[in-house]
Amino acid sequence: MKKLILALAIGIASASVAFAQAPAGYYKSLEGKKDAELKNEIYNLIHNFTRVSSYTDLPKYFQRTDVYPESSRWWDMYSDIPLYAPSFKGLNREHSFPKSWWGGSTSVGAYVDLNHLYPSEAAANMAKSNYPLGEVDTAEKVKFENGISTVGYPVTGQGGGCPWVFEPDDEYKGDFARTYFYMATCYQDLTWKYTYMVSQNLYPTLTGWAAQMLMRWHKKDPVSEKEIDRNNMIYQIQNNRNPFIDRPELADYLWGDKVGTAYTPSTQDIITGDPELTTPVQGMSLDFGDVAIGNKTTSQLFFHGQNLTGRFELLITGADKAMFSIPSSTLNTQLVNSESGTWLTITYTPAAVGRHQAKLLISDGGITGSRGIDLIGECFEKPVLTACTALAATDITAESYRANWTYPADETIDYWIVTRTRYVNGVATQEEILAEEPGIVIEDFDQSDSESYTVRSMRLGYSSPESNVIFVDHSGITGVQADQGLAVQGFDGFIRFICSTPQTGACIYDVAGSLIMYIDSVRRNLDVQLPTGVYLITTDQSHAPVKVVVR
Image 1 (cartoon, rainbow, N blue to C red):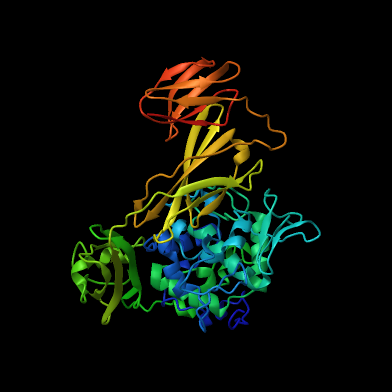
Image 2 (cartoon, rainbow, N blue to C red):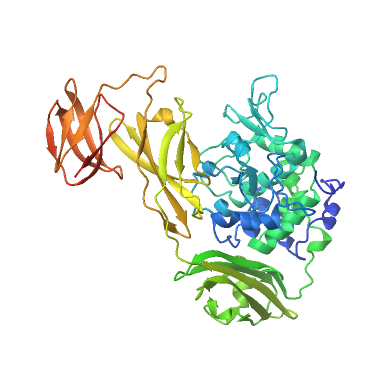
């Protein structure tokens, strides 16, 4: 299925001339570097990039990066089910390098970095979970297999302590290897929550078994035309590149046979001394995504180059130019020439509903001619969202369950926020989980005495009202002690406990999970005065929360 596998030896530097279209001199700064110093210099090259408008807009970008060139079929590296753009139904926005490994924070660039985000069929995405890459021991039980993706027990020496690994098809193993090389470099300074394949260090970051396996995949499945085209398109979208696609031999200098050897760039990276604006590139488009009328949004454009002089002149042109603005009409090239480059903030303030387009022209600074960057945004009416209806949990096991809900079919939704409340020893804690479809598997249930969840739908930054509360307990699961019976009735201004025997440690929470009252002991027909509201009540003997309404 790959297009035109490039039969060039990965270990030969001269082969890189035929690879992707990095500007002349893009990798010049790597010259003479080796090991940790080389990896750190690659990090300096790639970790500054223009983030896409939002996570929910990713399918719009995937239409440019992950659709077969001869059709509208999504190019899915996780399954072989024919699904077609622009519909994204049945697909997920997949972090191939699991977001839980860095804690899932949306403020980390990796959350929206197209270099490791791919469209994935939903069932395959759910099956691979946050497991590390690896080779499945087919002599053992296979957990999931669809002809492209396999999940199962790892072969000896792999997995990094995880009981399961995800093995992609041979056709895509090199793609995933180069993706992980990029991630282990671009985000080498993160603190890892899970260390199946990475360590808490700037070099080599990849653990020994992971580096060895990925290098093997990298060499057996060389760079393809698919990867080259995708790398070039991502450069136009977010202003950075995957060096391990442009220069495949770099991996050998960091994790392979050339560790300890200084890197020598190809002749393509020789700088003549002429002014060179490395980024942004001609033809790049800055998409501000969808915005509700009355709101505005910003995006940042990264500038970096060498031997530039004077100032850049910046001008916004086009029919919708009034809806885009910049802080200044000039940019100091000394900042652009610096090692860290500089950022330009551009603001989109739509004055009417509809699709808007303009162009940022960049000229002077010593460069010949000018460069044009497309500015694109779309404005919608402010959404009015109806509360979801949370449904009973399904597929309940000791370790997990599936949260479910419905929503009005005629409403456009970007995503859902599931508010998960965990009750442990009478203490309630909350976390918010982003879901892409009406249903999500909640894990680590075995670490809670019981749980509840509510759901909100989101569109253009606006939220629906909170749904009803669904409670989930361990009833019926072998080995879990059953709760003692507890019931509570709500009246005007007070609640009344109903229990066959006295119970201790009664905790009364509001629906946000905040503890508002603690009672050492409760008995049958005990009345407690409370303001109007909805409350959740647990005791030491009854961990499953009881919901009660006070009028």
